[in-house]
Image 1 (cartoon, rainbow, N blue to C red):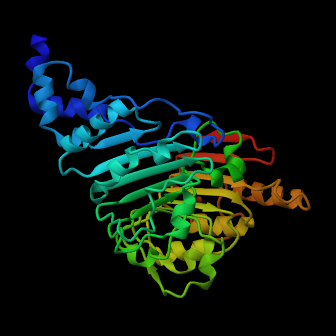
Image 2 (cartoon, one colour):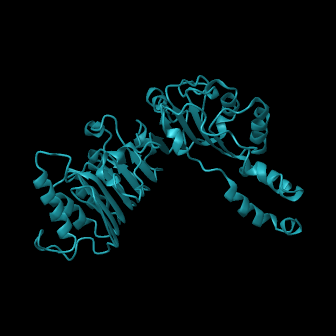
Image 3 (cartoon, helix red, strand yellow):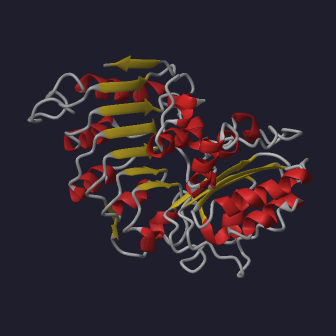
Length: 380
């Protein structure tokens, strides 16, 4: 105990930072048929540290950010409701990060837990709400004009919670600082649609995310944009003019048409689902970005289109291609031919595009390739 008590507060602050609970939903909660709570609410992190000794207790009380994360995945017993309020008070004015997993067969939706948390909604910075099964949360109504989230930067909605954002989209008034809206991101449905995920043990960071009608006004501050439009061709009728994304570093989208309007000079990572047009090449030329990572999932494009992109993306170091060879059973041989053409061109320059300046992707250090049978070949 003497050794523990001798550690300086600055060092303890660094050590304590690793005790913050993860802001994610456990895998078991993603199944809508989970009959009971995933796990009980445990008093961990700061609560545990504050009981080690008097010195540690004093240090934890002096660090309000240590009490600012709440991961509630089940009903909170009545005896612990006061502890919830106590943790909120110890967080003082620090922005709050909250994870709520609500199952249809539990009583959390109508417990006093949520009203207690809503009292501090002005401080919410991160909210992850997962509704397993059809459940209504009367206290958490995003359409309530009396609720405001001035500090909210990231909103993650999973399960039935996606209906909340469809019916009551956030505006600049209710959530002026919102820059990351993740819907269905806990389900990863988009990657499941592509063959690249069926037999690949290395997960790719594909998250299907839906945007809302405030995209243009958020454009200047977006750094990581995962955009899945409803309907998929929503950008076809885009009337907002050119979409400037000056700070965007990663873009994931299921709608290639957005690339016709967007410019992203700082882009480093690009994920495209169902590539089938030349818009990507024009987008990269217009943006003039140094793209480092390129992921083509369920690619339908002819080889010339893919190779045209690779000619422009000379700075790409990590490339993943999932050619949707078996997606169209009518012409499997033609699709396989296109895939082989791309694969061959990655190592033999100039034969597909005469006059091509050197190798495609000369800085390439890793390649993930999905063949006709869904087999994955990793090449350093």
